[in-house]
Length: 298
Image (tube, rainbow, N blue to C red; front, side, top):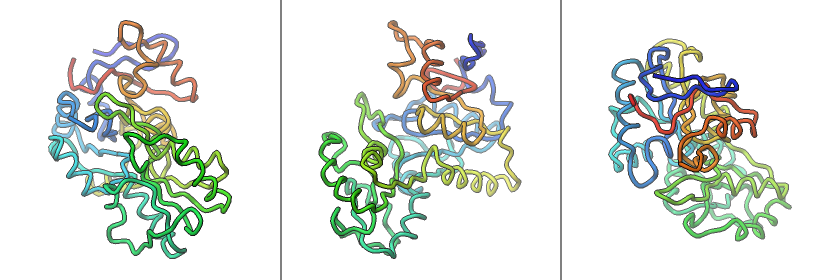
């Protein structure tokens, strides 16, 4: 059962089953909602399986720089199989369209770990560029997200920004929770580059291109036009999931025990609706529902 909260804030939701009948499709974030990079969350996986089996398609929407097939492999390695989703749409997929357009301009300066190299597969792109020679920057994340700090990138980004070359950022997330650690993501690097005057392009959440891919996928699955009022988005990131859903006019379930847990929970570790509303208000954002975790029933 759900419980309305004060001050026109979100409704506290105990389980997706409480509202599932109001929706024909789910757009669900991945990292922080159904896994933490180390293991999947069984109750969240169950909720998606139940919704898909009883109500309609589940589109997983991720700011991962990995393209769809690579992301599905990663999900499988964490125990999340296709019974819990109908399709996967990633920021990597949307970003590849930009990379194809910019590749003819000259070499790219590749910023990111080697594991993200799959985003370039099948694209005729020169990755030999440097801050001094590149025609543009392709950023999938820090070179070493476990140890790097923003200050390490200041000098090189300053050189590139003075040349006014575009950074294509494959992952708008600023941070992500991996196990019990908070890890820096490409979005933080993009913010630094923009603060130095460099132009930035992003296709993932909260920006429209990734949602357009989701709508296309949903219509392909159902064989009919989508109705935004019958889609519920689920996510834990305020600048990405929440603002993305708000920008698309989608109802949202805000999972508040992820990267915003410290801001939205009281001293006893319980979700506090007043604290949560204050978090949302900082970005003039809103959520129709809030939950401490994604589950089917309490």
